[in-house]
Length: 161
Image (cartoon, rainbow, N blue to C red; front, side):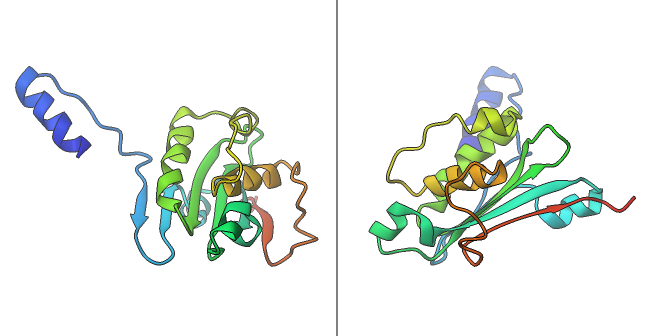
């Protein structure tokens, strides 16, 4: 839809309006919904970019529990270069297609994890999975991977020297 609007503006005004495709979301309306944006681990490893990733299961998300739909997860990848920028996100579960756009926007902004963590997520909402996943990456979540080893995971990858 947005491409059509930009094409019309270009035709009418004879001015180019470039669209940014760098962090365009991918959505798959399966059951559960699947959404992705930004880099994945394989592409980062291929480029030799160090990263830290966290996985957070929807089984710990209040809204998903209330909806009786805990099938899914959020996985966020950040840079491990000290800048802690969001590089990518994968999500599956209820409303994944709705909140992936906000992460695409945050990737475009290039804010650090500290700035992104100041975003207030309503409670209860499925986006709290994003908030908790970010907290896991900063070791600030009240939920710990050791307490929920199948539901919360955090790992880091660095290229060999």
